Length: 85
Ligand SMILES: [Zn+2]
Image (cartoon, rainbow, N blue to C red; front, side, top):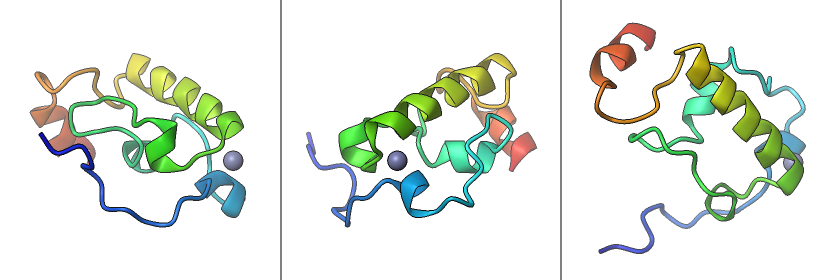
């Protein structure tokens, strides 16, 4: 099993670096960068987010899930993905 699934890159909090990013559940394209293809939220140590923004991000992802903007699991992902991209 590959431990390092993601290519190593410079880590920084994307939201601190750029104030233009709209940290909002409606910004699904952005949220999708922080979830795996199985719908899991990617851990902070991988994304490099700071604690504050990771917390805010998690909240928005969960909100987006409730609004059915992103999916909970891979099982019912296919058609949702086609529709929103
Ligand atoms: Zn930050």
